[in-house]
Image: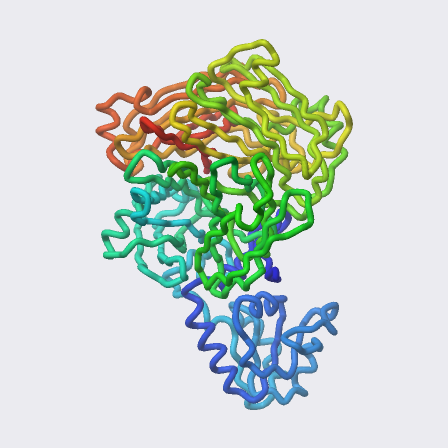
Length: 636
């Protein structure tokens, strides 16, 4: 059962309504609204802006006796709302309602023009009763301003199982770069059953200061027992971005648990993809985080093999703001890596993470939003003369003496019946070393390509560099620009592994097409870089792999600055890199910055990767003696 709510549109952007109605601090107000209306013998609904359907999805209105529903837009007359056919609001005066629910925030400006239509003696109640406190609003004058609801959900765990599992969120006050002067965080921690365990606030330091929230510290601070759930995170006083970006490290007390992922994407979607089936000897758990204050009904979340129609449903209900684990192998026992799985999530959950366990080693990665609004674009195949390589999906090749690197193309739109793609291997200088056309991969066709095999087939050797996945129309085929892949890395010595996945973009060309090359701020083309690199706590070292992809020839070398900052945002030291166009460079922070510089930077230090000449794509991770993590970086 999918929720009928608007969350995010690639045309209109983010919706604040579902966040406003589903915010934990809105619950008491909505409860008062429902109680007052339930005491009335007859209630009329006035829905001037189409908010009522979302309200009915995120709040239980069954105790209210609605006797009529009224709309302003004449094209909406005759539809059904709250069990009533909609009528023009001009007919409201003939209602016998004893109360009128106005489905709007900032409702006084809406109520004024229809006040003379309200039945005599009827109470008028609007959604403003469920407003957050003014102290929680960035823009109090416009309640549904997306900046008022810069929220996100964070998978958060601290337990003692198998040597301990802990989580560490790291981000930065990047809003200060857009003019924010006083930013705060409001946080509420929920356990797996959706019970609130702790609530607190964080005042962010001025400037681009770092933010570190460690589950071990939270557990100690509030005297908590082991937990596995999520944090509801709300940033107040922001500017520029209504999205909370972060890196999330999961680590253990021993060497067998280490991984990193990035922000969960705060807009629940209908579908997600990029979930791998278990390999031999593996167990894969899909962590389902309920994003709303209502339960996820049984059989509302399901899994199906990619490209096939049979669905295995989660039979259990997930409580409001609760967290549950789905054993993928139990629901789909006949699948095995490299099979892929599609998640039918019904807008109940944010982009979920999956956890892979093998011989007591664990790692966590994320899936991606599967688009439902795309159609094949014939123009993409015709753009080669203007955009060269066109859409590029780059990823690192880790040092091959220690690591295996694998690439798996993943359908990431419900309309993708095929993926006409090829893989290129490039050395650090940007020279092509190997190429493999994969043909027109069918939606249900799961292929995982070993970089070792590509190099062997080409009769070439290479220690490190990067791989690019591109469209390949040599045999025809359709494309829509939403090209994704999962990249898997395996330590040949310890067996530890890391998964990361992302989508393709057009890189480093001044021409634009449908928002590409993307820009973090302003209009395309995006031709500069600002990436956030968090540093791991001792004794972990931090790894970064920067790739300079170019759809068409661009500047011969990048002019890249690596700036080491203290937690308060002040700069400690910097280094410069010149990355060849089409090439890549990898570095470790302990080799890049001296021990004295790292000591001065302190325990909450970070690095900003800045380049004004080109757009770089970056991956980061942590390295211990027996484990490593890897995921793509976020920019701002």
